[in-house]
Length: 405
Ligand code: PMP
Image (cartoon, rainbow, N blue to C red; front, top):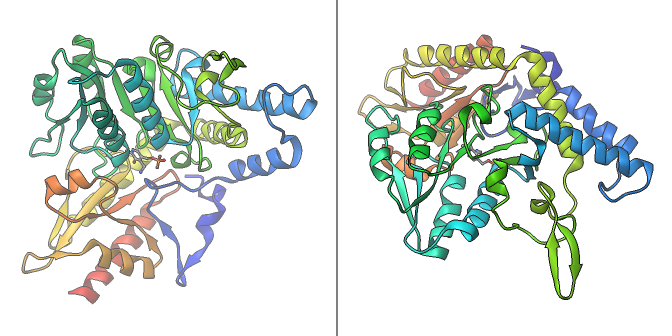
C-alpha cells in the first residue's frame, strides 16, 4: 500500500533490504509530510498567535486549521477539546496532574489495567503518592483479555478515574473500551483512553466511544516526533486547573495575580510545535486518503498471516494467539529443552539480516511479570508493509534459529 511514498524504506541495512517491522515504536513518514516540514520552514515559519505580521498570521492559521482537522479526525465535538502535547506520555502526565489537582483526595482510587504501558502507570503512581490515593489494577484472564467482571467489582464510590489502553502495545489486543466506558459511566466515573496504538491503526471516534479523555502521539501516525494530543470533553477540561504556566496560557498577568486563557490555550504554555501540528494534519489527511478502514484491514491481514507463519515454528509461543490484533504481534521461542531463547539474541540476528523488530519489555514491565518472561520479540505493521516482508522476516527468523540452536 503506497510504499513508494516512504523514501526511507528503499535503503539497505547490513547489505540487506530493510524490512521495517517496528511501527508500534514509531512509523516512517511519507514524502508529503517531509515536504510539509520543508515547506513550513522555507515559506511561512513565524511564531504564532499575537503576531500582526503576515507570516505569523499564516503560521497561526495553519496551526489552528491543523487542530480543527485533528479534532475531526478523532471525532471531537470541537477543536477547543483538542490540547496539543508533546505526545501520549505528556498527555497522560498532564491529565494525572490536572485531574489530580482538581479531583483526587486522600483515599480516592484510580483504575488502570494489567497490560498498560509505563506511561499509563507511572503518572498515576506519582499522583497516588502525592495525594495518598490508591491505584487499582484490572487483572487479565488466562486468555490475556481484561477481566471485566473483576473490573466491575473494583468500581466503588471512591473510584475517581479509569485509564486504559485502547490497543495493547505488547499484545496487539483491542480492548473492549466501549464496555469499559459503559460500566464506568454507570458508576459516574470518567474514563481516559490511551490511544497511542489505536489512532495509527483503527478509525477512532471519541464521541461514539463516549470516552472523557483520549491521548495519542503523532509520530506513530506517519507524522513527526514531538507532538501529540490530549482530548477532553469540554465540561471536564473546564474544571481542570492549568498544567504549566507561561506565555499563551494567560489572559492577564500582574503582580497581584494572573487570569487564565480560554480552552484550549489555557493548557498550552509556551511556543507550540506549529510545524509539527501542520505536518501532523498533512499525515492525517494522508491516512484518510488511504482510507483508515483499509489500512486497518491490511494491517490485520498481515498480522494474521505473520501469526499463521510463526505457528509453524517449533517452540513458538505467541501471546494472545488467535485473537484479533491491531497490527502488533508478540512472541517468544523456546528450545527443545523448554529454555527461552532470549529475545535480545533473536533481535540482534534479525537486525543483521535487515529486519527491524523490537525486543524487550516494551515499557510494560508489570505485564512481563504477569507473563513471567523478561521480554518478547514484537513485530508491528504499518500501511506500507507487505506479505513479502512477512516472508522475509520468517526466513530471517528461521536462519537466526539455525544459528542459535
Ligand atoms: N501508550 C502506549 C500504549 C504506547 O504504545 C506508547 C508508545 N510506545 C505510549 C503510551 C507512549 O507514547 P510516547 O512515547 O509517544 O509518548
